[in-house]
Image 1 (spheres, rainbow, N blue to C red):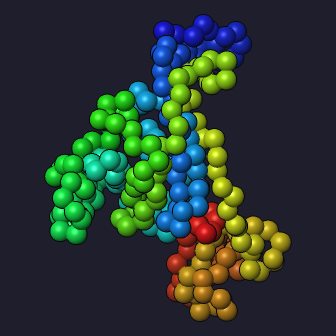
Image 2 (cartoon, rainbow, N blue to C red):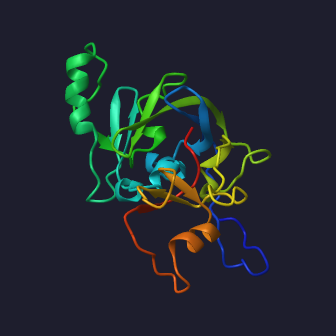
Image 3 (cartoon, one colour):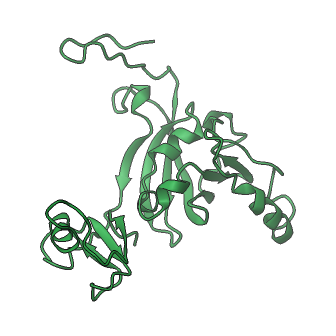
Length: 236
């Protein structure tokens, strides 16, 4: 059912209330070293790709990460789930299934083919609480995923609107480098293989980057023998 309209500028916004008896799952995402990076509350009725869309990793947006962002994979309870929303997305499970068949004991894989991330969590045979699941993106980057809790949604302490989920409940702090030139502002750009820089790679704030690499009209100064990528923060 729909929530009542609110008066004011957003009166036209209509939000769907979560169904009665909805189950909220808590999902923790950890690094390969086992450190918790993010944690979410997700509805059991939501498809897996909605949880995937809520993940944040700097590697998806730095260097050539955006060219591979459409491909992703979950491994949950012995079954691969691939993001098939984009026709150009790669199914990483094709190579992994054969390798796991050769290297793991019988029964480790419960399916010889991947399934779609359109599968809802409520449709899984079981939720593997406390067991290591895996999220794969950018071709070969793995993150451990754990289901840590399940509870009935309570409007007194949980957000009642379905559109709010998955809800980020924890995000680790990341280190962000200062500009190598002014050592005052946070860096916004990574410059690689520049013959004019004593450091490779080097990190630059917006102001110093423009003064050092561009003229007054914004054209790049020669020699343009370097590569420039946006910098968000360090992954470690």
